[in-house]
Length: 371
Image 1 (tube, rainbow, N blue to C red):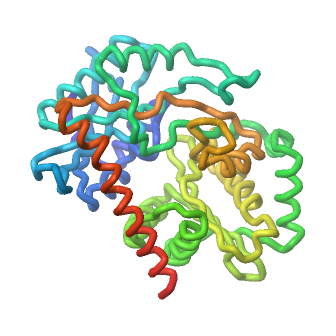
Image 2 (spheres, rainbow, N blue to C red; image 1 turned 60 degrees about the vertical axis):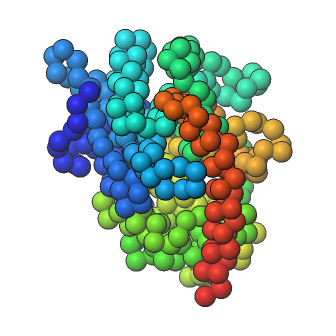
């Protein structure tokens, strides 16, 4: 395990060779998080021929919240580490072992890893559901090394993937009939989609804030999204698409692209003209534009942990299901505690503190819209 000393461009090119390359392991993501109390470091693993066989962006944070001393740290590897072959038992043991040793050296409460490794495909219990033996073996090894399946997943454990190697007719045929009807309906009712730019970031945030208030989820301050969206848009790694009716913005989404993959991470909509189905046309345009950009996978970013109707993501799941993607389940996030007492405090006390902070965040967003 050695620290990477090259440029951001070199890092992104290097990790793009890994099967599980992810935008949350990009150089840009680490630099953005550095503006918000995280210290990023980029590490490589090499074999005896000096070929790079693993890599990880590691985020480190010192806690400054009640009950925790200022010298207390946590480590997080978002959607990583990345390995050339997760089926290599020795390699994954070496990488995880090095991460655990590093977290102990840094005197961290714990290190959280979140490798983008498949556990299976399909909704559990359905005829198309299958288990991935390699993913099962990874889980077993994580348990053997003292890992705890995290109660705080941060990223989605499950998602929908659409195969963009299919042609447009095949992609349309894979959709549910109602989804095809709704995207054609949007076109007939005058919905158009334009490619946005950096100048649209404030518009995007206001729509995102409106969406969060309407649907009851918490978002960050506008400056955070201006930084995230602006950085990736400027670097050509993200593209906003904005749906309009007679020139009036009614919805939008932001697609991130890297290593031949596309991720639908942020979506927003206004209450006006929702009956015209702008979100269906937005998704279709995102799919075909990602395909045209050379991506082979479109990740719809998120599916329920439990595929039951009372899951908070059930409505989102039904919408995404209509586009014909495949449910992919991953191993999710795992914690490796070093300081058990602090870890228990962190996992049982901190959620109550965060609940208060989220409530304040909702109030702040409502105030933003009122301005």
